[in-house]
Length: 310
Image 1: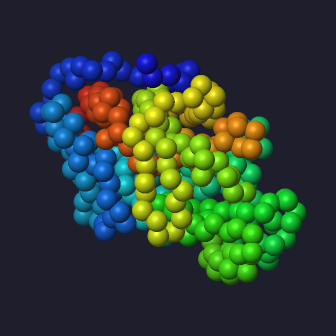
Image 2: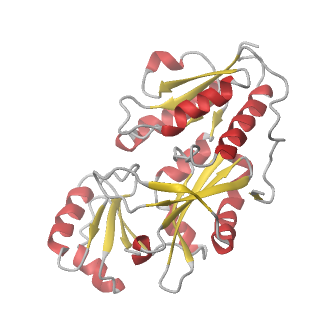
């Protein structure tokens, strides 16, 4: 059984209920996609089986968004290159019709400074240093001050491994050049490298409509790498507890989420990412999660006022 977040709203699953033959939904994406979205066709087909006409639309195509139609954010993976424009778009779309996940969540989650905030609140997080754009910070100093031997450098606004580089001992010069190039344009995270990525692995825990549904193991991914994930794997109890605690403050606002975790040197799970905007949900790996998402969207669409062609 999926584990529920206290306070989350959910709807019955496994029964699509009343069919609304003219219900419409937009699935926000980007064009061109930097990589294929394996969730998209599965979700469109599952919604069609429930009487929902869904189609994918690039968020940056202006004419597409003139009509007020409910929208679910999915593969908008190029927003990292024009964040202000994307946030303004999300606000505009949500004023006309529901947007899932909503703009307040999108705005809070777009900049990975949330990791520093989670750590300050006592949540186990991969140790992270946040460096502001234009900072004179030096990688060697960051590593020395924290006693790290290896680190991952990534932009604070990033998706699909954009700008992500692993720096091992002896690679500080190359890492320094990468850091300074990023800092000239954007805020940057430097994170202690977690060796467990190569053993127990990074685990992506998927949450849909109030419950954790499944997890996959993700292989380490740097700039230029293709995503490689396992089939669905069980969620360990300590991973489950951490994910539910992190999601609880946002539960009433969320349709979907993904919590990526890795274990520390003592075997305890830490948060690597809290993905609330456009995460892959690995629906192929666990068909019940696909059904849960399609049911949840159908139920939400049924509650939308008559702006949706019904």
